[in-house]
Amino acid sequence: MKTTIITSALLLAALAAVPAAHAAASAIAPPGTATLEALLACKAGSNFSEAEAIDALQAAGLARKPGGTFEPETTPVALFGGTVTHADVNVAEGEKSLFVYLNGVDPKRLARTWSVTTVNEHANTEAPSYVKRIDKRHTLHVIAGDDYEGYSAAVKCQITP
Image (cartoon, rainbow, N blue to C red; front, side, top):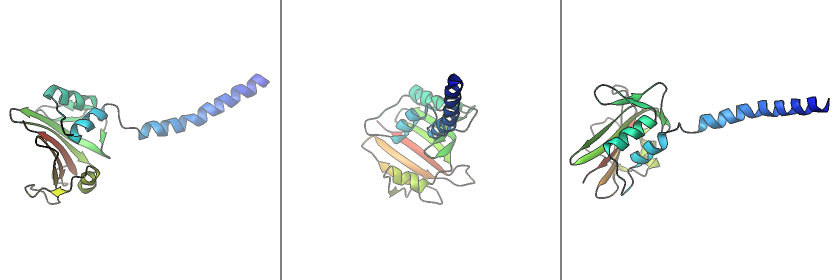
């Protein structure tokens, strides 16, 4: 009888823990996005090769599509409070860039998060887009999108020699 009561208590405790564990797991960023977020933060002195950028995109759950863009493979990819619609990487002589397009993200809020406050006067966007020169080589862009373009905001890390 005592064993049955202890077993029942353990079973109830285990069942009660399942929803809490599930809720905690759903709040955690998907595996693989940390490297992508770090590359997009465009920190001074940071660098990446084309292979490293592609690995980060794929680890986040984005698959290369014909034409060279990357899109969510099977499930939406959460990043910066929104979802990735597509991404691309460009490594050419003279410039490296990693570009991620997002839905469900307010570009003003995202820009404030990174203290990117300079309005990019050269951006051809209806809403303000922002740019921040991190150092001589690194520039972080937060670009406003619109429904016509199919994304609400984009983030670009640009590195020049």
